[in-house]
Image 1: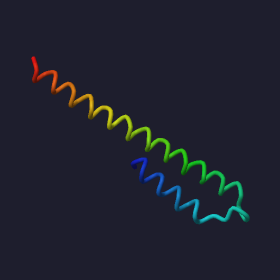
Image 2 (image 1 turned 135 degrees about the vertical axis):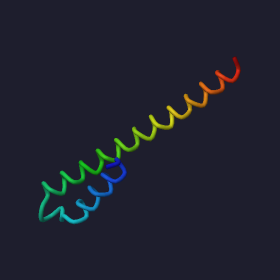
Image 3 (image 1 turned 30 degrees about the vertical axis):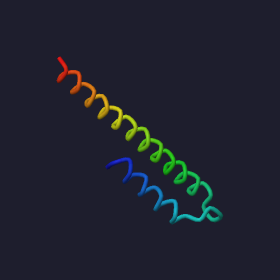
Length: 64
C-alpha cells in the first residue's frame, strides 16, 4: 500500500465519522490522515532527490 493510498483510506474513514458523535475516533482518523500525508510528502521529496542525484552521477560518468 502506498502512502497516497493510505492517506485516501484514512480520509475516507475520517469522513465516515462525526466529530460530535465520536470525537475520539474522529481525532484518531484525522491524525492518521495527517501522518500518512506527511509520510507521502517526505517519501516524494526523497524520491525526487534520488532521481536528481542519479542524473548528476550520469553526467559525472559521461564527463570522465
